[in-house]
Image (tube, rainbow over the protein chains, first blue to last red):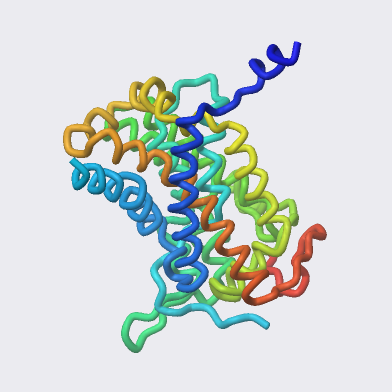
Length: 67
Length: 251
């Protein structure tokens, strides 16, 4: 009965949670910079560029360096 | 209490609801929609106007609307950008120029969501322009005329900020639309933009770009809330039409 209930709940997988943790880390840095320097929060272009940098470019560069 | 606004900052967009609504629509619309024009539509009403509401400095000159609320939402002014007819006209132009009904429809949905959401404040929007009646629910104070910092403090102290929070919570509830599987199976396949962009950018970059507006809206909501209530101690006022410590504009 309980297992069935869990199945009905849409629970993220371990890999989903790992990705989420990475985004949370990127968000914490973005928020800290934004609180200190408000201008950082004002532009959607800056916000999107930051995320592409933090969530794709930096991890990709790290992966390449590890090889 | 309030910091003066109108500095030399970059032009700003509107608050987080306009970043977050497209993800919720993406989940629930039975229609096939394209995410990029949906998001552009959601930003469109403020794209060309918000910088002039707050004002910017260009060398010795300050460019700022003498009556920001009138300029932003009124007529005469650029209030027609928040009307349903504006979204339809731009949508038809997109259909004509890009020959894409999908992009046109997606833009119109995103644009309409913005125009309807902004009826929540005390100025409201001329939804049925050229009829210049302002539809306004008066749930939160419109304070654009006070400058970007006081406006931010007021917005994140009243029901406007809470409305954004609803979209954030709802976005997390709809977390599947943010997964890579959903991006590959739904978003990427629905719109030729993504395969086109994929010729230049790798999939990882496009996935980050797809998630960016949700990230931006949520992070900005948290950052402005910390700035307003932890750093500057602006008081919360969640009463209807609040916060009442800021002078609200009316149509």
